Amino acid sequence: MRQIADDYRFHKQVRGLPTPFLRRFIEQEKLLWSNRIRASDYYSLGLFDPAIPAAAKRRYIGGYHAWRLFFAINPKQFHYLTDKKLQFNALAKEAGLPVAEILAVVTKDRSIGHCPVIGSEHELRTWMVENEIADIVLKPVDGIKGWGVLSLGARSDDEACWRRLPGEELIDIAAVWAHCARYLYRGGVIVERRLQPHPILAEVMPNVLHTVRAVSHLKPEPVIVGAVLRVGSGKGPADNLAQGGIMVPVDVETGQCGQGTVLMNGLPRFVDDHPASGNRMTGILLPDWGQVCDLVKAAAQTFNMQKSIGWDIGLTTRGPVLLEGNWCYDLGVNQIAGRKGILDTPWIEVFNQEGAYRNLGLGFFNRPRT
Image 1 (cartoon, rainbow, N blue to C red):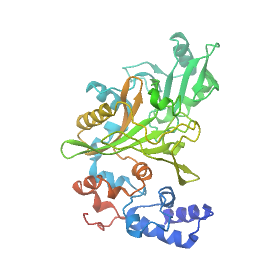
Image 2 (image 1 turned 45 degrees about the vertical axis):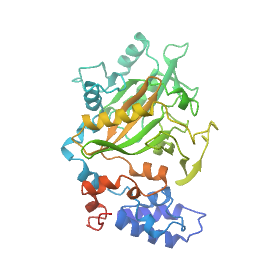
Image 3 (image 1 turned 90 degrees about the horizontal axis):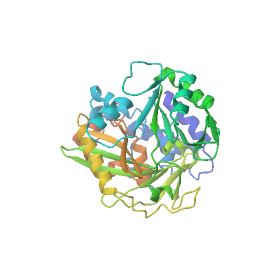
Image 4 (image 1 turned 180 degrees about the vertical axis):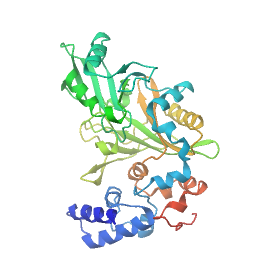
């Protein structure tokens, strides 16, 4: 009932569509019941369009309690392997996978022993100034969807100030510490060396690391069932959909990009060129695509305790780098980029093979294999 109330309020905020409010609300609530589609999903996926057949709308999956689907795919006892960023990084590095370099951790937990631990503003100042730290990224240990990411570039003439990327704003130690302090009670902040975007993608939007979200499935050999390039908007350091990122479909066989989609006021808008830079995205051949696919498959084998994972791969000047894995990845990313329900993609094999279809509806076994 709480979700229905939230949906009602969301619908009331959407104006200027030809389909009447009540008709949209009723249709979406039916899709909530059968496919976990919330009001926010209904609009971001473009399902308000009356030209889309009802059967096609039933091929989408929404985000309401989506974890129930993934519990059927990825065993709960292994979720920590990807949830805990420090442990994930260590396991991936031990397996020989290219990962971001962790320089320090800002935390109150002094038990972390494999890198410097910073617990106060004074310690942060001393570490950054004495080691001439520059070009770093700070990420909350428990961060999701790009929230709380801070990217710093070169130091200014004032040795205690850095360029905040993307942009020209300067930030000092006090502000950096204030940012980190917000997350101390949630595990702290990881400080990584900043990865430079590949020149092909830096031309689209500089000073943002654009990433590929590639979904793997073990059957039992790893296969890639879908890939999306996430392009940063330039308003912040992250490229996630929640941060205004542009979702661009990628041909898994060739690495070629299709037309991108960005959400404007929660509604999809199709773009060929980057809205900020004006540079073309449609048709780009992603660099090092063969290496990206090899890295995704190697990561899937390394973390083979889970059947299907959404991998974030940074496209950098040093080649593809594994940033993180997500056992409960956002299905909306692939659906928004591909403009079709995920049940009309190779992901349907994951859905059927692992028995996740039993959890599609709101607790009901209502979806036959297709």
